[in-house]
Every structure is written in structure tokens, then in C-alpha cells.
Length: 78
Image 1 (cartoon, one colour):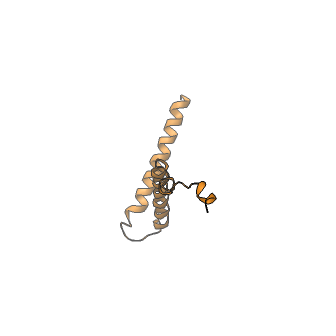
Image 2 (cartoon, rainbow, N blue to C red; image 1 turned 90 degrees about the horizontal axis):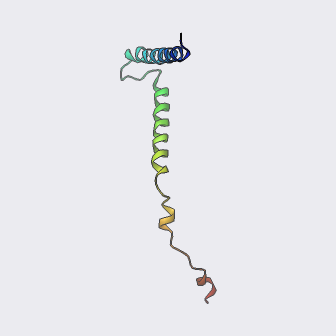
Image 3 (cartoon, rainbow, N blue to C red; image 1 turned 45 degrees about the vertical axis):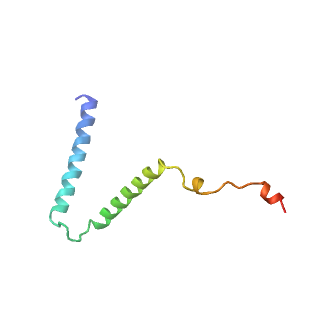
């Protein structure tokens, strides 16, 4: 088999296996608290952190706009 096709088949199989395992594990529990809740919270926390990082990356720092320019001449005058 072609190495590229073999690699694609392996990756597809891994993704399908993980997805099927997740659905099989969570199908019986529904919205009730279960063993996977800590994992779910970590994933949601990481997702929120990444979203905050991406949104803050595009903004300019607010401190540069809120500070008033200081004058060096104000200290020299009595």
C-alpha cells in the first residue's frame, strides 16, 4: 500500500476509535455527574483560556490609552 494512503487510514482509524469510545462512555450517563466531568472541565477551561488569549492578542493594551503623558518640566518648576 502507498505510504500516504497507509498513514491516512491509520489516522482515520485512530480518530474514529477515539470518537466512538467517547460516545460509548458518555451515552449511558447523560447530563448526570459522572467520571468524565473532571476531564470535561479541563477541556472547557483550556478552551476558554485559548479563546481569551486569541481575543486579547488582537487588542492594544488599555494602559497605554489611560495614562496621561507626564511632563518632565513639571518637576523642575517650584
